[in-house]
Length: 508
Ligand code: FAD
Image (cartoon, rainbow, N blue to C red):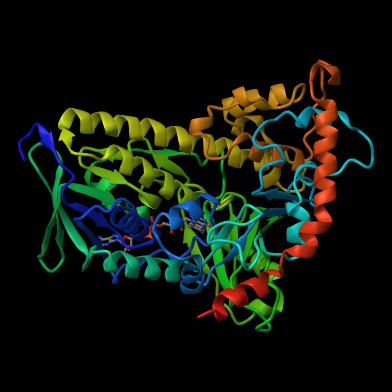
């Protein structure tokens, strides 16, 4: 290779967590790249949390050429149709962020007509535009037994066991030709031009490559320690920086499995509660500025009840934020090494998926200028994505009406809200959100997700220009009526969630 040319001939992935093995599977199976090696350290291990996903995971998995049944069984996966939030707006409320788009799609044409209805009979925004909340509250699955792989009448993602998912991805990647190297990287060797030349393992082996993917987790061994990418902290906006996690067994083998993530607000954070086939994954995410570890453990134990008496929670500490440069020279960071926000809305794995898709599109043979231009485009796109997710996550907190603890009061403090979100909220008090509030290509969460959170939290929009300003009132009423009419059919036809899982596990 001359200094002017570049070829990603041999790609070396450092790290064998969800990010590393998803990268290996995507490059080898979806993109059919021939020369991939992955270095992982059993001495260090993986983080082993990250059980909730977003619907994008379905096309990611389908493009790996695997069957949905095999994935469900190997990863102990269950179906997730959205997130149910309890206690976030005033402590006693409950609202759902469904994965279904509103009837009619992403268009916001229905919204002003729902806002204009101030009658007591008005359903919640989510109930007005989709049947999905009724489906999940009845404990039903998003699809029928006979539906094709990775699709069904309800939009869905999965919950899974992170360690089993990584094992499964490892097996299918190695079967597709990925070279797995077990060892701990002790040193990184660079070329004169600053590119990474090879990883030196603690037993002296040298792993050379043309392009490196840093999936080394929070340590960010390549992008941070070796290449010096700086970290933008978002801790002044998103306060949570610790979590306590427990794996809670079900009381009986046939205990119903929730087809959604339950996110319950507490004094200084919130608990996730995720139903897998054989256990629940439960964790308390909290702000160390607002409560002690002992108080956090007491909150988690109160939530779990006696089922947690014999269990010891595992603590995880994290910095909230992201690296401004996630691709430098011949190295791109994917996963926790690139950045992390608290697990609200499961952005971790989704960001891995979008980074991989972008790298897949951009990483082609060419000259060094083109490669460096690809790095600049990747960096600007990923930084944009991370920054916009901050807004979306903050929305869950900053319009709360809770004033019971310093945590909730601080979360609503305008000084903690990014300017761009504050500007949008100021406008949304007198007009509904518009598509033009968003640079859609950079949004991980599309406008309908904002609408579900905003109005689920009880945000009040006054139509200052008058309802007549918004066309389509009759069409909107008809659409709302169609959703209402579709509800009994959905409830009658969709199977019980555990029954569907049993069906997948039983089939040969
Ligand atoms: P890791 O799993 O930490 O893997 C790092 C790998 O690098 C390991 O194999 C390790 O052995 C290897 N490594 C490190 N240093 C070396 C070395 N020197 N030599 C060799 N190998 C090395 N995401 C979601 O999408 N949904 C969720 O619900 C969710 N919940 C979360 C809850 C918590 C509390 C936390 C902290 C995160 C959560 N995440 C969630 C994020 C999710 O866990 C991660 O995005 C995902 O697991 C990817 O992790 P990773 O592969 O980047 O890192």
